[in-house]
Length: 316
Length: 292
Image (tube, rainbow over all chains, first blue to last red; front, side):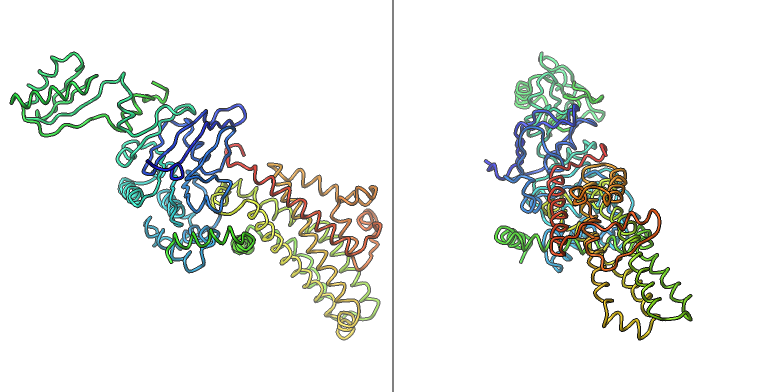
């Protein structure tokens, strides 16, 4: 079990902007790994991230990141890096200076700060453009230089607000690989993104938000299993898809079976996955079909989002 | 030493000797702010405010090349220099330059949506206030004292041996020192006020204009109210009295005297108390750019 000092903990946090609700009664604790923060526009994702980093203060409740509060900035911001979605930069700043000066403020001596800045620029692929003014960068480059600044001091918690915005597919893939590598190094990543397919590929957990409330939170698999009013989708790759579909339809809990175009797979929707797996066992033992693979088809962020929030952004 | 060890080392230093760390961070902030803001096109109008009198005295110097150099004209020129400092620099040039420099320190970053970078660095917000304030003060003092030195040189250099005697064996250097002190204290006092106003008002121009009016009328107000004026203290340090004609004489009404020690002490306390208030205000600032 992860100690509380390694977690991000929200305890009864509410934030109101005057009479407008930002987030309401949010309580959760996040373990290290990659957490996807998803929800429609205005659901409170950025508010949650700004609360996490002390850019705004909660109206009620407390926020602790690895046991530290943003009111202790010397300790806190050595542990935390935040890549905001504000696409603005100090006037006239060059890429290198943008990464270098925060390191100097963090009291790294010049030589180490220069080395760390070069390392971070290399990691985000911005070394060649480092001596150009940020004002001349493309949106993707600006996104990457912000990420470079956020990781330059080797934080243990990295908070990324829409980090994939403005990136082309190749750059997105590189960034996702970088996020995965950072998580594998033991970093705690919290990522908000509208590109659900992308965050789904790398996330360990999901926090689903809507209208300032947490709709669901936890490991993707466990969140999906709690959504019981939506049948589970299970893809079975097998030798005789038609036969398996016919067998499956004899079960009451199977509500849909669709054979894939190549005839070598069937997508089953069921309200009782355990019984379906029993059927598959029986079919194999009886020699009706040879099963190549069985995989859940909707244990992903996108499906959970659709089930719980819906494509219109309102709670389903 | 790797990054984690270095971080742990710096953190240990922060806990054991926080003052040393804060001093270091203030140094870095000053260095960064000066690099970012001292020599930029945006500051041209501040250079103009500072160096226009220098340019005028230079033109005057060239134009009067063949004029008589006697004790009377030297006394007149001393009055001119006093007028430049007391009526222009203190009342207008330094005032508006400080308004531009110090109001922009935090409010400018809010407008440009870049303040979050400062708030996301491992620096106490109070340290940010002090560091940025000192950077602003150094900018103002550097520009205006250089300009003042230029005026001083162009005014007295044409008097040759008479000017040299006045500067080095007469009251010249003492006057120059007093004016330099006036500029420095004025920059600190005005700067603190504008910094404080910028952290209270979204648009500090209106309160800045009211502050300008206040500084103009305090000479005719009761002494207790005069104590709340920067120019009240600066006037105590003027080495030369001038008597301009007409409405300008309002600016030269002599205040009740205060010792130099009390004057400097009061002005520094006034500055410090506004900085304390600014530190308190900055702790409450939230990054909600859309609301700004």
